[in-house]
Image (cartoon, rainbow, N blue to C red; front, top):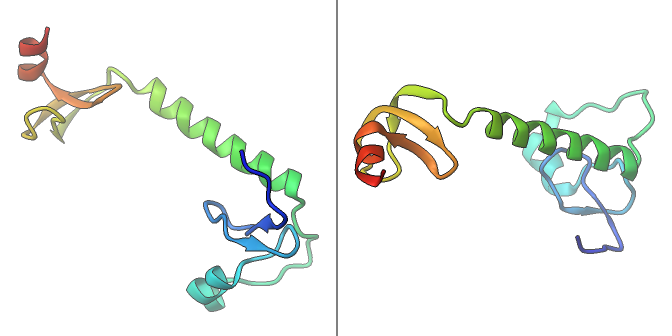
Length: 103
């Protein structure tokens, strides 16, 4: 983790610098325009933003880890690149044919 003199934009997944924590960066203001609305709630603090983002990252990582072994139709095998019924592996979707060759 690198230290910065500025806080990051309050919008999730944006790390553009802003002067104060809880603010939206100019790029996000331009991109989202009228979709952004001011609220009566106090701005999020840097700690609240870090907690929110860490919780989201942890939940996503747990979701991906938990799905290994799941089978799904019409997935592109990471080895042969064909669309088949594949099993989710740590490396990507893998079809039974490639798994048999590999194993």
